[in-house]
Length: 188
Length: 134
Picture 1 (tube, rainbow over the protein chains, first blue to last red):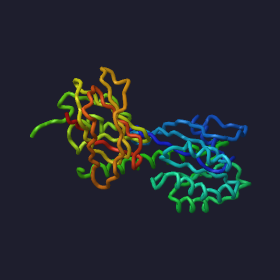
Picture 2 (cartoon, rainbow over the protein chains, first blue to last red; picture 1 turned 120 degrees about the vertical axis):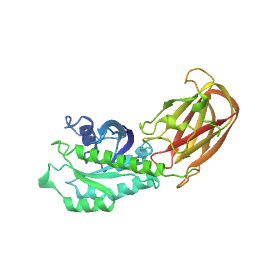
Picture 3 (spheres, rainbow over the protein chains, first blue to last red; picture 1 turned 60 degrees about the vertical axis):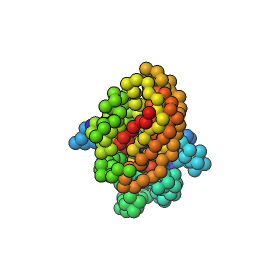
Picture 4 (cartoon, helix red, strand yellow; picture 1 turned 180 degrees about the vertical axis):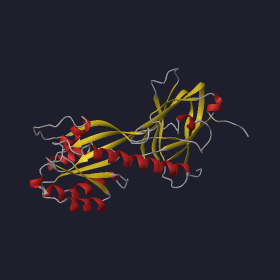
């Protein structure tokens, strides 16, 4: 049995639903905040995810960081050393998707060459009539960045577990990979 | 062959911040670099070694992987609390083989040594052997 711990950054533009998703993660899909209240700093939530078919689990320390441009720089100081990335955009806002590459750049620079597994999440999938970003386009970009793609609806509580499970699995396989490397090291 | 591992001298690891049951903290003091304790994510990470009796220590040797910065604290009490800092060291990055470092403790007397790994070169670090020189 192994209990892993990972610091997971929730990033993306303001109002794409990062906090709604993180509360959904945290409450196992029972709590959707109906009123919008902008996150102006950094909120920390802890969520334990079991890796299916093993006795192992990953404790995710989810850092819900403000998306508003003017606040990002101050918040970045509180990101710390990241283990995982959950990048969120709004399926009904082409702009929020376009800005994802800027977010990737910022996170990459922050991590200084450390490999940080991640997922791309298109949120608000319930608003299908207003969709501006096609799944295939998002999927393709995610792949080019080495991210796994998921679509969610925090409001309809749809598919909200999927990104977390995918992050936990990615960290778990990174651990196993590193453990194997360490087992094969020669003495100093 | 002289068996001089810390565990054979009655030392114990009394605290470790991470646990993978296949790589328990006892592996740090068994004198064998093939066995190791591995951190399971995030920093800082720490472990505390308790000696059977107060010990004068001139230096410690640490065999590890991906450790970037290590702080060492000690105490002379029976409990694993109220530590004072002794020294700290930045380790060099190695690839394919272990980091092997000797750290001078200037003959400090201690019953517990606390090792705090504040940062690493990767998400996970491992410690394969800690030994002390009297």
